[in-house]
Amino acid sequence: MKLLRFSIYVFLLIIAFSCGKKEVACELDSEILDQDLTLEIVRLEDEFFTAESKEDFEFLLEKYPDFAEGYLGKSLYSSPDSLISELLAIHQDSAMNVLYDSVKVEFQDISEIQKDLENAFKAIKYYFPEFRVPKVYTFLSGFNSDLILTEDMIVIGLDYYLPITHTFQPDLPRYMAERYARPYIVPMIVTAISSQFNEINPQDNTMLAEMIYYGKAYHFTKAIMPCTSDQFIIGYTEDEIAECYANEEYIWAHFVENELLYETNPFEITKYLGEAPFTDAISTKAPGRLGRWLGWNIVDDYQFNQDVTITELMDNPDAEEIFRQSGYRPRSQN
Image (cartoon, rainbow, N blue to C red; front, side, top):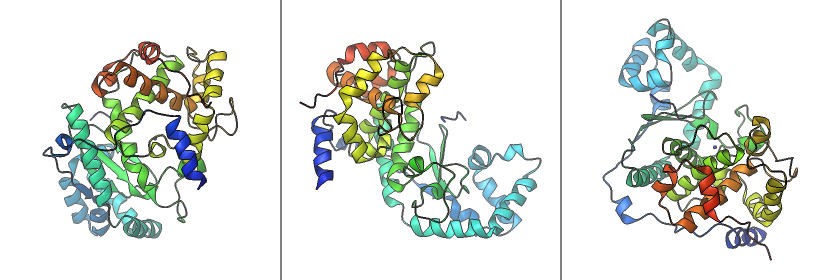
């Protein structure tokens, strides 16, 4: 399987949306929702933690061969018994049992996640008929993996999405850990799936190409999930989004004056697009990954001004063309 390997508040939101992106209709067409597609999420953490014997685990490995191989790596073990022994040890681990109990409490009801993901799959299938709806499993990863996605299977490590106040936490920087919460799960999945349709020019290794790639990914997610707040798509807080728009002219000027769009040095590109608590080349108050946010704005303008469909957008591998035809200009705050 191919692996496809993220009051004053009201006032700030008004600024963000009035000076920001073009409005997106917050609804899915009935033609999309009426498709014959029903999603079931299999709660494998329950099945594996209620298993008690070697025979129980043998049964589960046979029942879910895709999970056994694609997630547990069954073929990498010297024998099935080796894998089963490891699973039995995990089952008996007291910390893992505490973690499992916490997941059972926090994620007792995942019907909203299931419905959001089902609607997202319907929208993807509508725009991209070749999309194969994958099987979806939840599991207790022991903080080994948050999301595993292939074209055929998705595994959600629910322990990653426990409240940030929980005793057990994944080994992540605080600024990243705050994004591992229930509202981010489906947008994360949809953004990852976008890579199946996000055509690129492999010879173009410029910062602009990277910016447009992420811009297309976020635009895809917003098109598939139009009622989802931008913060759950890009992982910025509402305040950070408002501040970005308030300083968009300054941010754009920095990119232009420093001739960053056609930069090819990977270190320089990472400074503006890689995971970081802030983009210190611009300001320690500016959130990280600003190049991705800027790329999203460029792509939004391209789609709006050129009136292309989501399919046409994702099929276009030419970052330079998308930029030139976007007519992008920073949103003036005057």
